[in-house]
Image 1: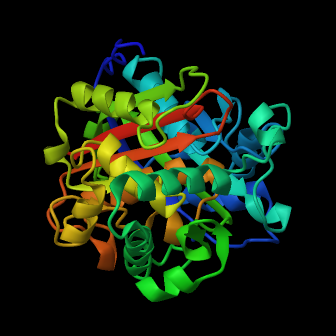
Image 2 (image 1 turned 180 degrees about the horizontal axis):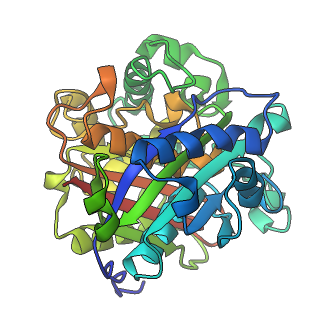
Length: 390
């Protein structure tokens, strides 16, 4: 595995506006219809006029050609460079990463990053994957992959691991109940999670994120622009994007190398450590993922994920609140939009706009999302951002 660190941002970069729509089933909306509101609301919150936007990066996985142009033309933005991004679940975060790099390089001063997805178009079930992939042809859909991770967790960690899996979902639903943008806003018990319909042993329905529709947008600006705006700002102090490395044969299902290396680079970029992080939005597409990523993000030692979960340190009042939004398990997972929505949540948290789910005193936050299952790779992409109040 390469030890090359991701390059530092060349200049300070800030987020000054952020917005999303409530996640859920928006069956009558088009992709453009989903994206218009967040774009306009983010610009309004930032105090930025549409004609001031110099470039846009727009993520979706199933939106078809020219998704970004289809959205932006409806709000009167045209003529600028628009880059459409597909990085699976990591797409929305990749859009933010590319926007941050474009501003930090000095090429632009004001850039939009947008994520949008409409999964209700498929009518339910697992999402379509690339059929040319040999593992997909053998049935390796996402619930199956994460069930394998969960089985390995139960085998290696012993104890009452099924309770760990259920407790993650209980925490997610408790947080989501406080979030008006979450798809699921009702709390559940450990017993209800364990008794829910089986999906892929040992995962039950409540241990799996819901599919749905959503859109989110952020306004990324240079320091020069930030100084003239009245909107609250947070600084992007680290922005890391890694792709997976080929590893044939058996791999450690509880050691996602792409997240371990991305976290290492992000902390190095920011000059911070895991103990400095007040809030985290991580990729909990299935409950086992939160436990695995506690360790990969260095929130605890390897082997201590269950202990950290049950300590209460990752919920409100704890040292590092994980998924205050309810995460993907409660908020929902509209693939291309999820990474951008994570960033919106952290903008609200660090600027004191998170309402009933506000993490008290939050000054530093991290977002993490992985994307895509490909034979031979841990994941196709991983994007991590670290933010601080200004």
